[in-house]
Image (cartoon, rainbow, N blue to C red; front, side, top):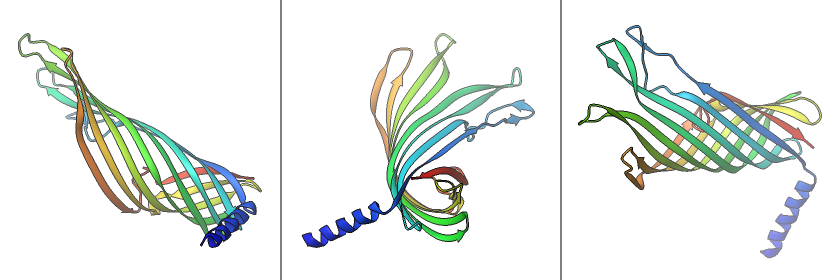
Length: 249
């Protein structure tokens, strides 16, 4: 048994020694915003966010015979979105912004991938890429609300801060078009709308309450575990197509 394991190890080292290796990176950025009116007046839609999202994923891969590539990747991302609610004041026929909730989330990921070439048209090739990994997210949910004081007729600002911790295991299969820019460089186009995706996500919501009166409390408010399988646009990204750049040594 030990001899068999040693043979497998030597074969693996031999393949990597004759393989080409390269570095690549995927980079994406997006923003969201909206304008909403009701009765001709500026208003709010609490289902639509305003904000931005950024993701960066470097990777190291080994290409065997130009048709099979395997490697590992790392990822970091940040998203910040604000949802607003509003109330209508009939005295002056205007909408006033009431509670405002901001979601800020940092994510860190690590995983491996296997890419197999399934089509070749000169500089343009089609691949199927299977990947699996782990993603950790740490975020803050901040809710700011103006509340009227029942005794004095004035208002005070109540800020509620919730910490959000996410642990996610994921696996995907995605078609990828690769276009060669020369001997060493190439571009990737990931067809996310045609992918398969499975993930298991465990979320913990920790609450910290701060008020003008100085009252504080901290506890685990809720836990949620979800399982998701998608054929088509995967939940790991909101982009129909994402781009990457590769350099092979």
